[in-house]
Picture: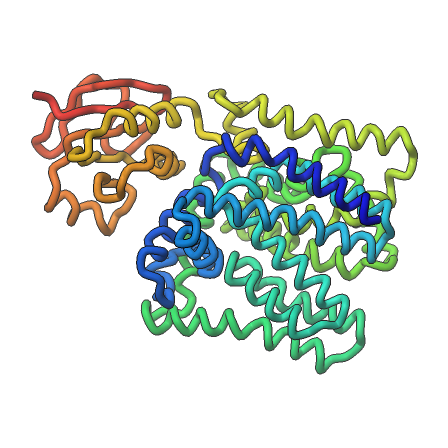
Length: 471
């Protein structure tokens, strides 16, 4: 067993090396999380709620900030945290699957997570999913071992990394009761794990006047995204899409064949009430709730990252349905091919296929034009330049600024609504970056005017153009 788990961990580490060194922060709000953590690292203090952390979990920001102070490099800090968490996820899932289904199922589940394209990306950027999943799997194992205090600490920490972790508090209590038939211990688990959540709500109430400020922001954001999707797809198509989204997301996260086997094994375990059915219920009840919000209420836009927990826990049951040697070989072949195909479709590529594959790809990447524009700005901006940065509905301005890696004092960012006008009152921009479908102007023009300032084109890229003040 020890040799087997070591082999899987070596595979997991090996496939993460290239994305770790050559990837970009893009999805999972990775770049914003790192920027917020970097500000906190300059003056560590108790967070002032939503006013400083916005919609992001404070524990994740704190961990990144602490590593920034230790290592002195914001990208290295965030990525090393994610990498350690990702490898820990693989080990914890192995232990869980071995406990529930035996060593062969453990190998299949851990290998599936090791080669999951989205988990590879989350393990090599500043995103929060790998950190969150590590805390949640640790809490699950402690719950199954009836270590209530340890489980509560880890579950409470998971909720402070990602707020969707709060949905699991009552589910963990129910799981504890189903396994141990001890109502007092189940209630104690829920109560103890809720303490960090209530403390954070109190901090938000104190500093913002609204205890639920982060949750309201997240709900509003997803409602706006859902409204955009409804206008694009239409009512019937969007609601049908919402009904099948979670199973499809699991097949993308765990690869099509192994994901389908994980879904079938999980469904069979739940419907037949076989051992482990309660873990399936814990994995999929949040998905059922978010499916209802997507397909019925139409106020939520699902994303593959939300299905990471369901995919990981479903992998525990994949081996139940792939006992035939030919099927096992086919699953492993597709498992290896999936991240390679997604990387080939998205890395340094433009177009519809690339944009579909990019959020799922094992290597985090930017559209080539955005990456090239960021590199050009970094190479050509002088220390005394102040750069006016456009904003766009798909937030491409955020990773562009992050990849350019210039001091924050050199940016006037249209997307930072509260800071934009005060900064313009103090500083006069000498450069500008316009983005495709941005708010400031048409990026295809050679000149553009902004509040009596005239800018001339320096370099045009796909999706972005860089300008300098005209002489």
